[in-house]
Length: 308
Image (cartoon, rainbow, N blue to C red):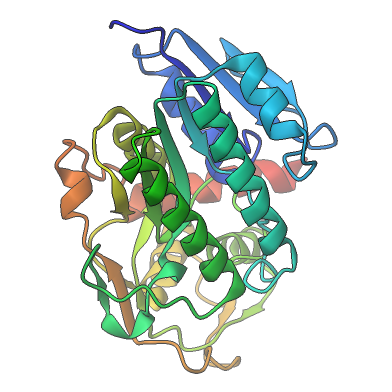
């Protein structure tokens, strides 16, 4: 394999980060797998062969000290503010942009080869329906999207200058184990398991949902590829949100829990939004988890959580 392949994943205890680590564990590409978590965060996932580091990237000296200590050849940056509902406008978006810029600079100074950041559909103008890299306008409407896009553009400059190879994995809508409880699918799962009625809107919007295990495999495939710039990671096709709830009802046999149309649907959002995944498909990656399988797994996960 030539050079010593040592990879670092930031945000290793997060929803996406822990699944990226699980996917990396199944790969034979890496001599060492390192992961960063905040010292105060939850217990790290019980993975074999992961070398854990504690630290907060929002503290300015942390990035250089971490990269100097590990000297990773590859880096997958998943850490960011993720507080449900609040992350869109959270003031820490600016702090995370600064921290990410420091991380990329340290990575370049210490000889890093390939940097992957977790981007977002929020970097695009949402009125286009189908999001295509290099075609759909990059016009974020939120501080979160603006900060992510600013970091993406900084990575492009690093690539152009030859400091390292980089790509932004533009993530659409993700679900699966360890998802934040207040999001759509966890809320629906918990309601069905407990039998407590839950109010929803009409949910007629169409969105690109991808199981987190498929997302993690896509991120690993992107990391191991030579693709640069923005790369969408989604299912490649939209699903009506109400159909996800229909499937959960069918899987549980519950028909009286969801109170549909009680809440107002978000205003100003487009009726349809999905990813063109042609660039990522060049790596050989394809989604493998069907909605029925993924939602069944989500129900099992929340049954376990609620039983504790």
